[in-house]
Length: 239
Length: 239
DNA sequence: AGGTCGATTTCGCCC
DNA sequence: GGGCGAAGTCGACCT
Figure 1 (cartoon, rainbow over the protein chains, first blue to last red):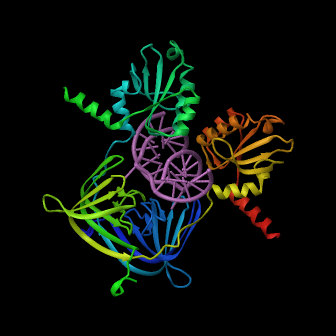
Figure 2 (cartoon, protein in one colour):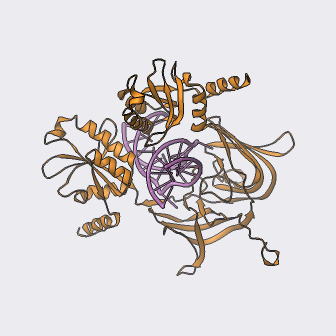
Figure 3 (cartoon, rainbow over the protein chains, first blue to last red):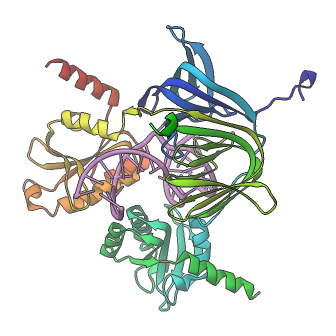
């Protein structure tokens, strides 16, 4: 508590509707001609410039940490200058302010998610036979020098099988698995029963990714997330 | 103009500050506990749920096209339901509205960008000698079965040179160029004077990408965007 | 601090 | 409209 009972309020959001022009200079340069837009200024000084369309991405913005300075342009118009430590600059030249309010929000409890890749990995770790029949899990997040393999398994014949899991299987995922396989195949402990096999498992596999995988001897496995969740639920109900 | 002089206003943005709980079910499920947040409802019905922190990405959102329906929950509280054609649902349960205004924005002229990869590619196409001395351009966006090569060139000795351009050179770009080279080296027309050479050109090349490129016999070229733009400007000034 | 990888990525281009 | 690559990607996690 500060002097005089004043409390520093760090969770204030300012909503402004203004006719403005926006110029950004940083990793690129970008320009927005004069028009009416929504400006959101968050507690950390970050600024979002929204139009009424598009999706959630602003037309222009400044990421925190940054500071907003209110000044005056040569022609007397109000000018906001937002600067970051990395020398990025966002300049907002204001012709007219139509709305300007500030609101205290308080601390946000945060978002709870379910159904992302990590969850899919957990489900497949519990049910490796859904990836390929006869597969047994050796280790989840099996470490290598260039990163962890999602699932390391062995098939019925004792051959090592590296499983790369994606929500959506694209070409990058195949490259990633290829790099792992190249490295894993240098390990005599893994190749004792033959070369390490690769399985690319995803809820959806793009055609080009499938072509590249097949070309490299990698097996593709499309997994049904809902079915998998159903299996896992019923298993847990037994205990 | 509609009957009675009423005009359909399609560029309206609604700004709401409310204590609310948010539940999303679609590609994943997500939950936001009750707290005070900023809600932005755009003209196309899309909804953004912002807290006072984070960057420009909302905590939760619904992408257009979608429709917002205002209803009432079992306990009598106001409930907004946003639905899209793909069966995604965003449910906002409102405890209290602290602020609620609507604003007409008009049509946005749109964003002008400068300095992205495409622009860098244009500049290097005009000045291939900035990539490597003696290089002559054969074709920009040279087509292959797996995608276009940014610049196809020949060096002073007539050897084909494939140039992959990135703003920031990372490992993925080296993989991409490697795939192209593999394919290009199957074409007798290109390999008549020796194997196709690869050049990885970027404003900045990450150490790991450089190592991988070198390991594969790919030349790295760091290009100075500002200098390049200067050259191009002065060239155009001659005409 | 730097690298890697996921994302309800979104966005834009080309087929 | 689908596929694919870029992004001022952002953010989380790990070394």
